[in-house]
Image (cartoon, rainbow, N blue to C red):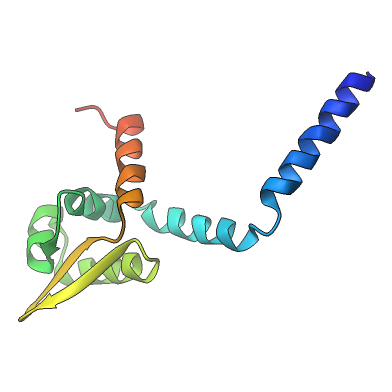
Length: 114
């Protein structure tokens, strides 16, 4: 029984060390994951994984109205998942960083069959 207690103490110590000063990062991860946990937003990320696209292209590819699409894009951008730039009259969106693309590839690997 003593070995089990020592193992528990060691695990608690490791977890305390791991979680120490990480509350802000944990909350940021939760906010990000909640935002991408929506069918339309997953579709948007799927399209943008292939590269930069305009709102008009995304509207066509994802199949949702531009007003609704703009709300989703704004939310994804506010959470740091997407970035955008202007090119004349067009807003172009892309995935903000390669790590997000890696996360999405893992999601596809786990949940999608091609």
